[in-house]
Image 1: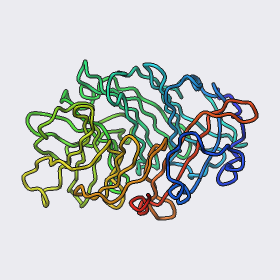
Image 2: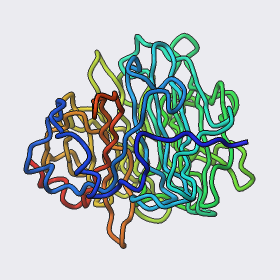
Image 3: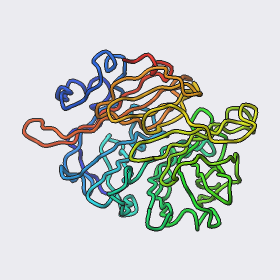
Length: 372
């Protein structure tokens, strides 16, 4: 049975009004002032420690993902989003929901899923948040690569306009969903280019080629893998715990963008569709940083230690802007236009109380390359 836990303020303190209640953002956010002013503060709120389990100052990392089945500015009786909290050797996924009074609901144990991570990895886990256009569902998953087993695990939830649906744990994605093929990267279809149906993605190795395939939940709500949508000769680098983003650029032709850590640095490779790359080889792109997404424009968004980089589909630099503590979470359509959504979480104090502050920034995707 659900029980109500009050946040430090009600969620009626949202949108631009919230800026009046929050302290100045002088907490290490390195986004240039001009860039921040071009972004729209669409949602802000704050939470007391232990509003949800393990949410306290000792948490190494806290991420927030606003619900895709709700407005960027939340409404009553709807999903608020998800918290992903990293503490020690564990990462935990929480589902957050609002009641009719815009108060935060905290609920039964199944709203919380945890997995043990490898802290020695360059990227011990990554999160995929996407909208399933069949039935209006959204899905969020935490993928973790386990070097000792050369396999991936995931925790995931499904959510729709009616609220929380279910959550799943898959201990070994390769053996459970890929018939034992080695899974070398996990990710998703870019929002602008996603076909109907399964919208997570897997890159697996059978014999010589790498196969790109959709991954996710079928119409019955069970995890499954689809048939391969692209395959190509792998790059000559070690593969393990990679990110992959798929883009169905034209009907039946899927571009695969692969990002893998090599010597503690991320490198990006692309498998173009056969009309561009008939040899079907993964080609290196001179792009710095960790892969975030393929934007609606076809441009590629990556992140270095301190900057977001926007690159053209063939690797040419379009622009970059300071990242600070911003985190890219997803791309979504608002009034028919594609927007990139970023979140910022930080611990601070107000009236002597220690709080977790959450801010959500929205910027038209077409403007990202012009931010400085």
